[in-house]
Structures are given as C-alpha cells and as structure tokens.
Length: 230
Image (cartoon, rainbow, N blue to C red):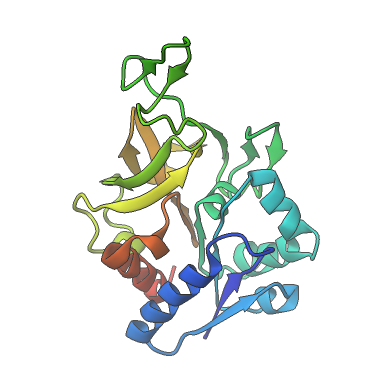
C-alpha cells in the first residue's frame, strides 16, 4: 500500500509530515510513504496526502505545472482513494479562494476560502497610530498562529476517532474555508469567532491545522487516516 505525499516545490513541511506519517504507518503496518512529484505515481497511489504552506495561488500553480492536479482527480475523484489535505492542501479542495485575488480550487468541497475576520469587539485593539490590530500580539498577517481546541461537529467520522474531546492542534493561517454545505464541516475552532478546522466529503478529508506539528493528537489523526476505508 503506497501513500503518496505530494511534493510541490518544497512547500508544506514535507520533512515533518513525512516523519509523522512514517510514525503513524509504523502503528498501522503495510503502508509505504512515497514523497513524489510524479503524476503517474500519484495516480496509482492507494492514499494521498497533500500538505501545504504558503499562498493558495502559488501552491495551485506548483501542482498544475507538472500535471499533478489531473493525477489527483484521477486517483481521488475517479478511483475513490482516501485523500487528506492539510492547511493549504485543505483550502485547495474548495471552489474559490479570495487570497490576494480570486483563484479557482479543485471544487471537491463546494465553498470559498476567505480571510479570517474577527467578530466585532473580540480581541480587537487600536494602536497609537490608529491601526486596528487583532489579535493583540500584532500578527495581523498570520492571525491564527498557535494551539487551539477543536469543537467537533461530526465525532462519528473515522478520521476523528478518539478525538471527540477538546484536543489541542497547531494552526498557522490567515484564511479559512467556508463550506457551502454545513454538513461538510467536521470541526471548528474558536478564535475571535468560528474558524473551520476540518472538512470532509466522501473519501476526502481536510484539516486546517497541521497534524504533523500537533504531537500525539496529530499522530492519532494520521493513524486514523491510514486505517480509514471510506
């Protein structure tokens, strides 16, 4: 059984994700982790993991140039192989992203990717020069950076097995997905309002957080994914 870990130009914490997947695979047994940019290897994989870090449009182009998007569609949507997208890898599953323009995604989970906007009156402060800053530590360009609990909508989903309690996961992002169908949301996080933390549809699942950086909870989620038979 081969798990294709997609490499698209060095983005996506590949080393950390591979190490985490190898640890999870050791618990499951019989899974080979293959870091690849080869469309043919992606198309014939038994499972696919698409990590992500950086800008939506850049990541999409990095996948489109070598023909990986077509290979992903063949493997995931036509052959029904289990798919996990993390961070930008999850956002690419949406229909449209509004990060620095308007960009098309895979349209696997209908919805849009928008900038995180805090609810009025939640942690917003005004600096001495009149700028609005949220959160107070000032990382406006990466407003959600750190550990957050999950509020799980669908604890029955196999990939979230054993994670139905409030469990810390590591986030680092400025945009998040808003699924058109609320049934596609698996979990949310509370950070100045609700942020989509995980989504799923059919044989596809995505996490806005980084399981490879989320210690024991992240390994549990990856192990669940490697055992999942949708």
